[in-house]
Structures are given as structure tokens and as C-alpha cells.
Image (cartoon, rainbow, N blue to C red; front, side, top):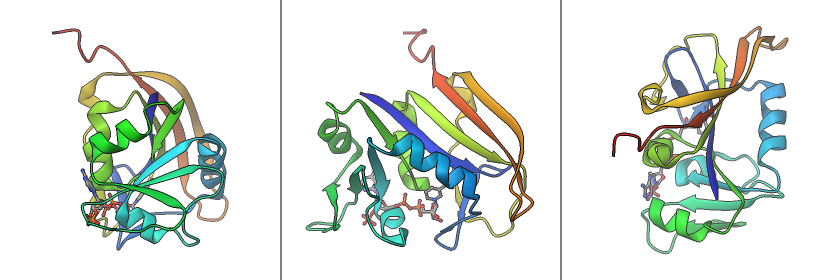
Length: 169
Ligand SMILES: NC(=O)c1ccc[n+]([C@@H]2O[C@H](COP(=O)([O-])OP(=O)(O)OC[C@H]3O[C@@H](n4cnc5c(N)ncnc54)[C@H](OP(=O)(O)O)[C@@H]3O)[C@@H](O)[C@H]2O)c1
């Protein structure tokens, strides 16, 4: 199983505000759909509850919560990161899709990061992606200088693969 994380971050690693995304860039949403369709997505209970139409179609949806007997229509529910990884161990590729608490829990297990870097500092950000740069990543793809016509935001796609995590053992 390849464990990937996919996230849109601003210049300060901000990812959310008042329970919502910082921005909706339509090309990025399309890319998210293309990358994740046919695969498993793991998300925190808060991110799941913020999905406007519930579980995302054509993907295996897994929701992580500490609540007992939590029910999520169209999704499987797990109680911990270990349980999530064990449930999905036979899946080819699994995407952790947020939010902040769940990214933090899974970061050290991640093999790949799919970043959308938005070149802007948003005000009022209250959820952040964890510090990741010090962990050791190799850039495998980069697309810069894109602009979202609707919002005027510029952004880049950056794909990273983990490497060398255990070199010092
Ligand atoms: N920019 C992006 O790409 C992106 C993507 C996704 C989300 N977001 C944003 O991120 C924000 C939500 O993030 P968040 O950190 O507040 O919430 P979250 O990570 O979506 O969900 C947190 C909840 O997940 C459960 N949980 C988290 N870690 C767990 C663990 N290790 N074991 C068991 N359960 C665990 C807990 O549920 P219980 O309380 O039920 O126990 C916890 O309250 C929103 O603003 C959203 O829009 C941004």
C-alpha cells in the first residue's frame, strides 16, 4: 500500500478556517477528483462532516473518530491511525485527505505528498498542515505559475516522495 497525503496549503502552511477550506480552485478540485477516484480516502470526522454531499463517490471512504458507535453513511469508520492503516493494507493507494489533526497523525507514515501551494497568506487561518519539510522528501513533479481566473490566486502543484527516513538507523 502506498500512503499519500493530498492537501492545499497557503504560504504559512494554513489549510482551513472556520471549518472550511481556504479557497476553492476549480482546477485543483478537478485534480483532486482525478487523483483520488478509484482509490481509498481517509479523513477526519470533521472533514467528513463538512463534505457538502457526504461520502465522495467512486472512492472507498474511511472516517477516523474516537467516538464510539459513530455512523458515517457511505463510509467505513475506524478509531485510530493504526486501525485505518490495517483496514486499508491491501489497497493499492490510499490518500489521507485531511484535516489538520489527521494530517499530523499520518505524516510520519506518508510515502507521498501531493501539495497545492497557494501563493497567498490568508487571514484568520485556524488549521495548519504540520511542519513536513525536515522529514526528507524528493520532489518528483512541479507545475508552477498557474492562476485561478475566478479568485485571481496563483498556485503550484508539487509532488514529493519520502526518502531516507531510516538511513540513520
Ligand atoms: N486545505 C486542504 O487541503 C484541506 C483538506 C481537508 C480539510 N481541510 C480543513 O481542515 C479543517 C478540519 O481539520 P481539523 O483538524 O479541525 O479536523 P479533522 O482532522 O478533519 O477531524 C478531526 C477529528 O478526527 C478525529 N481524529 C483525528 N485524529 C484522530 C486519531 N489519531 N484517532 C482517532 N480519531 C482522530 C477526531 O474525531 P472525533 O472528535 O469525532 O473523535 C477529531 O476531532 C477544516 O477547516 C477543513 O476545511 C483542509
